[in-house]
Image 1: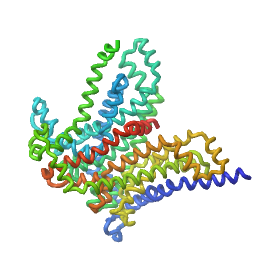
Image 2: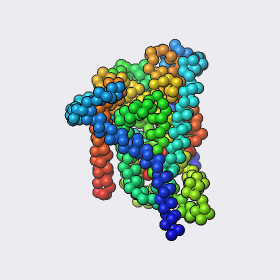
Image 3: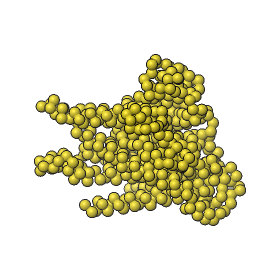
Length: 299
Length: 274
């Protein structure tokens, strides 16, 4: 009797304690998703909601055929292909080196993390000046004879995304480094020593032992990169106009959604693009986890 | 022996220092230009200043209401952080320690919401809150950020490790569930709560997108938004002020980071282990 009474009370308190999430989920997640679905069938302007018009699948047909959206999607994929590989290598190399040294490890780690705590806004504003045709990088390259003339990369067709990938590597490799280093330090050193005794070189040890054992960390980093990277906004918003420069080479899907929804006021279409992008990200995630788990099963 | 080992590691240190230069140079570039006279910033952006000028720092207080911007940003980030620690801890505790009907379903649903990209919610949330009259208030910046599935997950994992014996003993002493939470769970969850606090505060402090969407009235602006607007003015104008402003926005963050360096590093490591 007393036990069931306590259980009842526990159940009641459990629900009370879980209430913040339940309310937040209903109000800020579930309802907006339903609203997004509804809006995707409407031609709706924020300022004249009463004039909303049902348009059936028009928004969806338009979204699937919109060359600007596909261009924006291509841009982020192009950006991520470079960013993910570059930051992976940089973070892995620095993590491996930090693991080797005896003194100053904390100091280097602390400093490498500095860009991570700086806001994207500040970092991007500085970077724009540094990568500017008048800035230090290009000027030194010209002085060294490696560059013929200054490059106006924000106005070019192909350069914005690789250059932003370099920026983002600078900005974020500290997090990946930390995660990889944590993983490396949890590997039993005896395994590595035994392999060294058996004559395995540093590269073989890294390739055959460290890398496979880092799989959980690698999967985590790749998943985070995918979700965040495909939603890039602030970097391009601060660098380009609302259409991603003259060739649209700086346009990302989220910048496009922002432009459509909040400056051109096509809220219905913007909501459709949001759903569409979310679906694409979801599929990409599924594919990625399939590939990663299949590889695990294969070994 | 010791020196030989150190010498063997010299190339590694050289490489690490090279990395350090690359990481630190942009900050150095910012500091250097913030104390340069205006003409030198425009004509010799890459050279060291010939003389130190504090004009930018003096004038930036005329162009930007920095104290107000700092206060606004601190208010928003502080409120989000306090709410986030409290709400997420409550839910995390319930999911880890309290048996209630539908708990497992709730947890599964919560994990599923972590896969929802925030861009999906952008447009409909704006529509919804616009109609509620939330534009030009801090509500859209604070309330949705106060509860996060990811933080709840972190806390649930941590609280799950606290032995039930503590809770049982307190229950026998007649403590209420709220007292258990307030007197036992919260104090014992220090490490994970500081992780949640640091991640939440940093995200709120550094956010540009939220303030950009929701704030129109300059009196409500946060630091990042003000900085972005300041940048958008005529190029070349405010050359000194812009670098001073960027430095002033960055220094407190760097200072706090260096002060709490261990907790920051731990916060990000915790995230990676899950």
